[in-house]
Length: 79
Image (cartoon, rainbow, N blue to C red; front, side, top):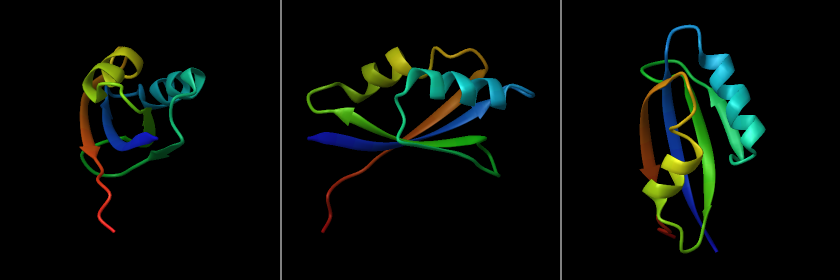
């Protein structure tokens, strides 16, 4: 069982491609998109059962150079 979360990332100017490349190298996201608006990237991540979401993201995402802000959306089974 896993927890599905969506993470939006705002990158420093000119760093979006470098951040995206670093995310792909870590092989932690199932989907990664470039987006318009307040954030530059949107990713879908499945976090292993029992893992603390905040700790997992801190250990695997937010330490990537070039990220200035993140916004995480948790999902819940509704249907």
